[in-house]
Structures are given as structure tokens and as C-alpha cells.
Image (cartoon, rainbow, N blue to C red; front, side, top):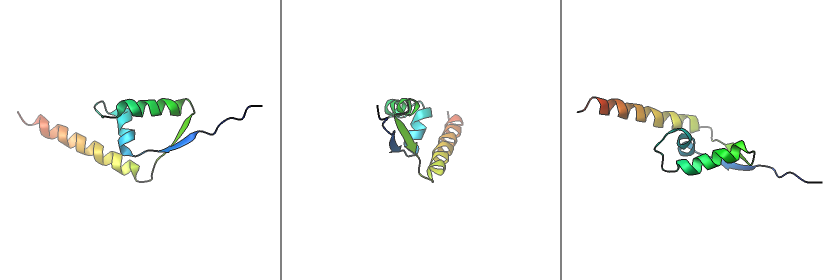
Length: 73
């Protein structure tokens, strides 16, 4: 009889979640490998409660930065 191993639990912050989606994140490759491990059932993600606010803060800064650059030139 084989005993299945419980998935490893990994706590991720906003930077990891953003790396899944944003193209220029420096750790995108590592984040995508982690996502593949999640899809394979080898890893489960735990996300701190305030992470959604951190993600929204970064995204809003990105949008404001893009709008600010569009008016220059």
C-alpha cells in the first residue's frame, strides 16, 4: 500500500502573485514553476489576509505610472 504525501504548503506574498501575471517581474520563472507545482498537486498556496490590498496597491501604482508616462514626450 502506498501512502500519498500531503502537499507542501507555501506562503506567498504579493510579489509572487504578481509575478504570475506581470511580464517583467524578475522572478517570473520561479513563480511559474511554483504555479506548475500547484497545478500538479505537489504544493498548496497560503496567502496572508492583507495580500489582496498589496496586489491592488501595486497594480494601481503601475496604472498611474503608465498614465503619467503617456502624457510625456
